[in-house]
Image 1 (cartoon, rainbow over the protein chains, first blue to last red):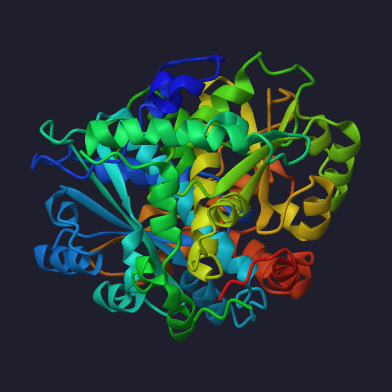
Image 2 (image 1 turned 30 degrees about the horizontal axis):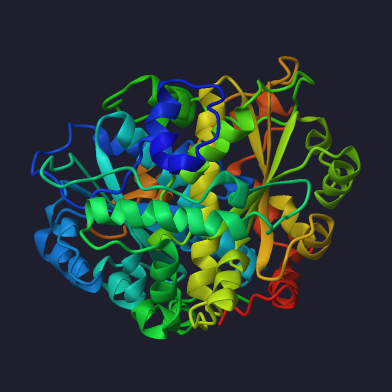
Length: 264
Length: 264
């Protein structure tokens, strides 16, 4: 709790080893070349499939990518994230409406629900719930992970590279492997609970006190880990301010339309 | 593995208690009135905040709702899901771009990234990753859960009821509590891994064999649990075919526009 929240840590409630593993999460971008144990992929996918899925629609799929040539292209699409090439296991998570559409075609029943934002959201959320279970399973085995949202920098190229059908796209990737102990990876502080957790009604009032406190925590964290003290506010102004920081993702709606997603 | 996949179960890979907990998930809709232990909410939110979040934007919030009047309205919105009233802990998970927008206003820096589908997706995915960690934490404590996607049946009314600002909406709710042992809750089989997990490239070929096998598993599951043998295919034709099964969610894009989401 202290590492996750700094001075703003709430009192710990019920606790066990699984919760300790969850709290200990940090994204890792430096991996050893050691392979993961045999059967790890199948265990992670079983954990992923055990997550809830809206109405059991199961609107997601996964592709394990090992081919070094493909990994290299994916790393380039992601702005040269070398860990995509280096990690022993790379899984692309797919928001996948194509499987259910194939059922629609095979059964000759129009699936009227497909072209809506609602169904698109369900596909993205199904993929996210599944992937997070895979992350928890991996971390419980002593592995580390990092999500690669930058697959969305160029969804059309990823789509082509992995041979996806229409109405399927890679919503994010996931690197899995053993952390390189030479890479410093500290638990990252998050916003105080008083900013994130509300009771009965949304209440933005605590932000006025919480944001400066969190800025101070993040400045200390970044100076310990990245040599340049930067507040959360400064990072957000940089990340959410200029359109160029979207790295092309501002075009995703148009690209997804070409890949068969109507998003009405 | 056998309960999750039936006859199509893959060989188990690495295994531990956390993975066993993940595999044992089932959604529960009948809860005892017993309260959850003190501090449970704070522990679940700490687990949720420990999930990855895109660029540390933390585009989600949560509201714990205890007021019986509010619970009743939420249950009605969700098509009279009584467990929303009965569970000891109900958490609404919010895709929340409003907090970062308030920063934009306070710092007088335009956040150009806000009106895009990309940022909306990140908010939904951030909320989903967080919520799934809360689910895993809850289940590790012997609690059970069920997601309530039906908060999206009427996002405007939920928005009003919980006093949300613009650019925030309840993407789903989560019931948490101790399962009523009188309610039968078996692990639900999922599609075979050969349909969901691909290697190097997407391959739809296994579906031709897998779907009939899964239909048989689901027919047996439903006859054991719900007294009417129904295949997965039949359920999907019913769920995804007619627009009426969306319960109004086909209007979500227009409603979200009114709540401040541009989704360009």
